[in-house]
Length: 298
Image (tube, rainbow, N blue to C red; front, top):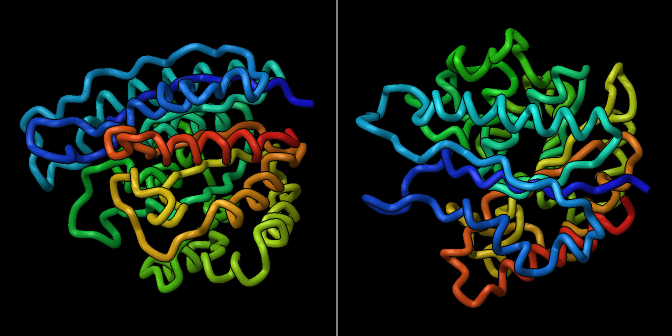
């Protein structure tokens, strides 16, 4: 069995403020899941915290590029150092975010080691870039574009390792049916598995199809990115952009468990759940249960 290491990555640097003068509450995700007994229930080793820089957009204005870019670059390197250390030691890091920009830290770490793919279980691809949008700004909606080399050099080419991910090594699960980005994603070579397709065939079968590709083609392994908004808002309303017609827990569980159980899978990150939007903790308890159950076979 793989040795799980639980690491907090409580960065909210990639999200827009939920209200003037406020900061995104997803930095509390790690604490909330730990309150659910995640460390004990996973039987994981304590990996500590990778502390992010302060959230401060300063005088940023629309059109200035990605906000918090310097802080994001610093944090990406810092998080990559931690992930790289655990992966090289043969451990399986479980990163508790945080927003989706923490994926850049994992991708940079793995790019240092070799060639790795990614399975993203997410309601959206987070593929906004200047080729398909009038402006950029929030890295949490752009991290896949950045990881594949689209965007400003101070984030896409850290350590001269651009791109951190190759498009053909990315598999997306949980994109909503009718997503406007699907045509572009497919055109650049990414594999897209929509909610409807997963529902029709089952999560296990969809994951098995992806594993056939993630297990070869020169890849050294792959990482799993889990965004809580892949779940339908009826069960997971505590996210910054709840998107209707999502997957239900019993549909995500076999998908996630199959991916994570692969000997080629080297780690997982969990993002976007916001305890500020979940006053009774119901959504957090559900997410913790899902993570524990999905990792049972690792």
